[in-house]
Length: 189
Image 1 (cartoon, rainbow, N blue to C red):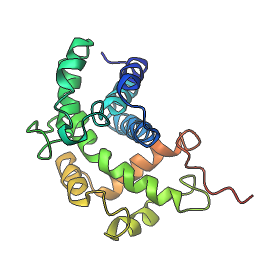
Image 2 (cartoon, one colour; image 1 turned 90 degrees about the vertical axis):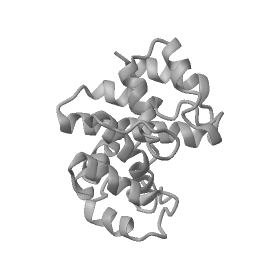
Image 3 (cartoon, rainbow, N blue to C red; image 1 turned 90 degrees about the horizontal axis):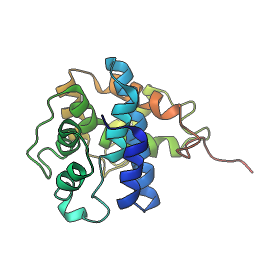
């Protein structure tokens, strides 16, 4: 089974840009929270989240087309490779999310972008971010406009969950790592 340490090692070989490393961490911690929600292995789901954009920096126009073979050769399980491929469903792959792991990754990949943007605008960052405040920003299509809300809603539907509930889990997971994610707020000094 893929460990978080191994996922970080593999990711470090391909991902060098700070914003992509941060995104991997956001998704990693969101996935850990989703795993806890479903009673699954937190570190395993975090590892899949950490590695989900393995080829994106080097191949943004061919995302997920350079993931399967290198990860297989690195010893990553087929189940984990499939989960990673499924987050690009109907965008750059035809791998439909089926398990809760896959559906969660598909959903939180975009959702973490809005959570991060929302937290960055607040004096105390994510530390006091409530779902109600997040939902106001979620409904404002101009806010974090590049984040695909229709995809997030489709993912929530796949999970059989309301976006408010998924957002609450994701916020909680990211909140636990606020300092590492740079989401503790604006320094008044």
